[in-house]
Image (cartoon, rainbow, N blue to C red):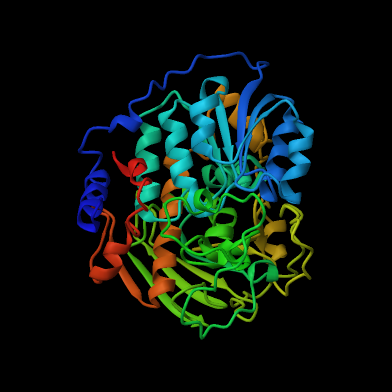
Amino acid sequence: MVTRRDFLRTMSLASAGLAVGAGDLLNAQTLSSKKGKGDKVKIAYIGIGNRGEQIIGDFERTNMVEVVALCDVDMGAKHTQKVISKYPKAKQFRDFRQMFDKAGNEFDAVAIATPDHSHFPISMLALASGKHVYVEKPLARTFYEAELLMQAALKRPNLATQVGNQGHSEANYFQFKTWMDAGIIKDVTAITAHMNNPRRWHKWDTNIYKLPESQQLPKDMDWDTWLGVVPFHDYNKKYDQGEWRCWYDFGMGALGDWGAHILDTAHEFLELGLPYEINMQYEKGHNDYFFPYSSTILFRFAQRKGMPPVDITWYDGLDNLPPIPEGYGVSGLDPNIPTTNQGNTPAAKLNPGKIIYSKDLTFKGGSHGSTLSIIPEEKAKSMKLPEVPKSPSNHFENFLLACNGVEKTRSPFEINGVLSQVFSLGVMAQRLNTQLFFDSRTKQITNNEFANAMLAGLPPRKGWDQYYKL
């Protein structure tokens, strides 16, 4: 049995730089042979319904994959049957662990589109098995899960890792870097990030005092594997089909879902790292179980490499719009946001995006790959802007080319993992509805012992602790 004390000690050692040796689980050979650009990557898909179906289609359009295996805890469901029928020769599994045991020598890479809480064990096992890993964002649900995945990836430089914030291979990524190199984006002091779209809100009772009652499992669903590392919960449809995003035990709310598509380039190119303060400024509908209806969170980042401190203020909720600067203009519907198979939602008053304030200029931008514009427009018209290079490959091509040793991934674990940790700190502030102070050197919360223990999350269920043993 793994006690909480043992678990936290293991996590602390990992955060200090992997001071302990790798366990048996992670001693697998990770050397991968370099292939040519035209060679197809043998791939296994884990999580094949809903968002999984979408990314499988994106990989298919590259014409660079050979589908070897399909894995989903609900292989008999309508939302998985479409993919299953498309790849009749692929081996089928409900449990990813069995897939690695029985077919692990037949594929080179995995693509993971499962709920947030299961990203960690699947990704860790894949790396341990010498597989390239594409995983949807956020990389992990807890701070230390992201830490362990970053360290595991760094130990295996021959393996390609890519997190599914697709904007890292679209126009915004290259524009942000080009504008920084040209000195157009400089001396940034504040960023407003906002997600006020109705796509991720529910109408549950915020006076909740216990978890939902047990309901009948869908036919053939492997609920135990779906739960993974998380303590046991009785099945309820309020956890299923994307609803898991709303629960602290399974998802990361609007911040973890959309933050990676809104703040990713600013976080990387401004080299923000980890914040020293996370402050809950407003919450509507706070409770112990699921994310609030609305929240405002302030993240404060220190000065670094000659760049000034930056305050990022996050606004979510239908009724929690951020202040808009003069000359902002219209918030158009962002064409870069993927469609959802959970039904269309009406346009929000302000579509997901960001406002970046620097010493001399103000920028507005949307989500995903949307490019920035300078506001007001009159200011931009008087400037000579540099030409922005086009992306040599989309996000899925970039990953596959990296598997073959041709390119490097643009959103590897060691880059995206830190952003995932930023969001996990924000989620902790949401859950506790408080202000947290964080020491990025020791990776500890200094003003709240309970919050500091939450960095590791709850100990995993029996049989799932092996993935944390670094």
